[in-house]
Image 1 (cartoon, helix red, strand yellow):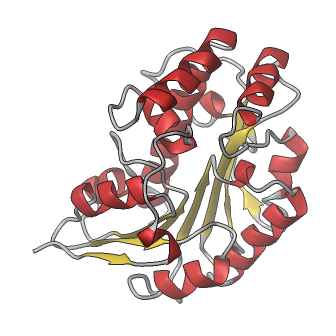
Image 2 (tube, helix red, strand yellow):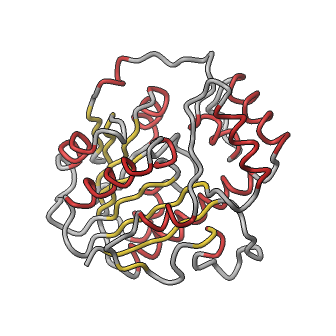
Length: 271
């Protein structure tokens, strides 16, 4: 029997709003998924009409996360993951990558979208040896996230904190850094932080498309400079090659030739 749980929260009683585009559903659309609505497809198509490269960014972000998790499990020995802002389940979810290597791995997913919650309940099944759980919470509430995560994870043991394309939804960069500090502060030495986010100052067409998206009525996503993304890792031991365009982070030999894109990320260890 699998070990799976859902911790209810304020968003559990929300209805899915199909009249407003939602970032998780649009991201799912760009990744080739079907869990979206016409309003999301329209917003996604409007974005790609201005900047077709967003599909490459979405898929490169997913590949970056897969390589991070593979390293963390196979080389760093991590067996616990706290994945905040997980989005809709798609191919190669955190628990699938991790438990394929180490079936006993335990994963807590965090999101606050009711559609994501419904899919998490249906699809995020663990191996019998490990566990998956879903916390219905907002990234802006790190204390609640940690309290709920502790029901599944032993936060006294090294844990990997995954923040993939979520911190851009926090408008104020200082507040985003404070959230990282709060979440990581509850984890012991030997834990890891994985961050990747859309980056400003790389591609003006990308920035134009993102600015138009932010004015569409969807929840805004704020691109950060590379220095701002790097600041999330202050005080940590940043692994080589540092904060780089995500295709350049330890690419697999079979990967396409890396290209510079407006999505930067890195992985660091808490000393």
